[in-house]
Image 1: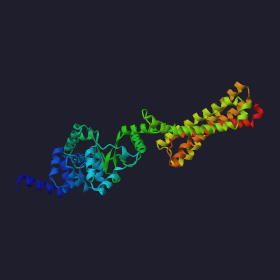
Image 2: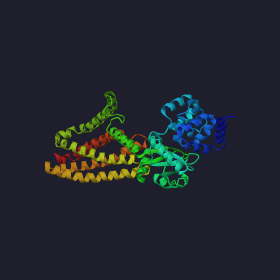
Image 3: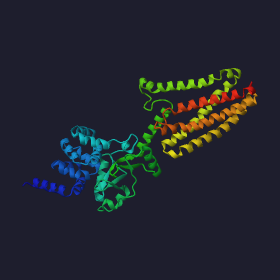
Image 4: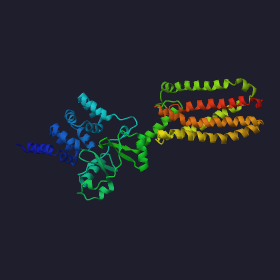
Length: 436
């Protein structure tokens, strides 16, 4: 028996008897050396050690072995483990692997890779560094240096147990000052904050902001480390969502961009302009009901846009506050009614304050006490409705499962215009004997 054959026999026995230690041995090697070892082993033996490797390192090794061998290894892995490694593979390797995997295994992996649209799993980065609890400090430092040379510097490294479950985090200062032969379990910090892959993006943002962290590890339901979500990505996504919401509030498509094709922009905007046209005619219809009154008391036409405009502005203030509360998850379902009453109260107080000033201006300008009373009361009514609808519209849309940002402003403007016109002209009709 040759020396090489004997050596391979020893390695195979090592992988069979203690795959965990074999995995740790691979992690202390260079990637080229580790790849060489995996290539020399039957796939079923390699598959014993791969689950114990740091996910990114396992993917880096699988990237360098033949797809046929990689396929055999993946087929023997747990579906969740396979999915975690799969996310870290190069796009080219992923594509070739998916083409060769059996349909059943392919579906199982895909199930683990599909996360909700606004979840931590969708936005996490997979270029993180994790190490096992029993690795020595000197080996960990070598790994971190190796990662930095490849362009992946890390302020923190995460520590996992033999099942790749997150158990701690390494602070670089703690690592540098620790004795070189200590194992990471004695150096790591155990009070670690993590987020589940299905956690909503807004909850993650709130948690990171509260703790003043710039990143957090993402784990699955069994606390296996999947990736890292970074605050800059959260901010970028939040900004993107905010701009989409602003566009939606005013009837433009959330997907429209500055240089979107003209046809696409028209498709996004034109339907809402038709809806807006319909609501404008509704307001016009209200005015038409009082044509005779306006013909007799023409001064009412002066105050129609004033009442409606103030209502629109007050409603927009309420709408903006409530929309922000919904985005930041500050409004629980049992507090929705309380919030609506609060905004109604603010609307009434604002209406009284603005209504009194408007009444005084009408009195001085047109020398009519009753006109001032009518205009002032109309302002109070419209601002009260503005506060109520500014809160109720987005809360109602949220409750029935619709996007609160979608055209809220158009609906709000309809309410405030119609109510503004109706309150002024209705009150003028009631008190017309004192106005003519």
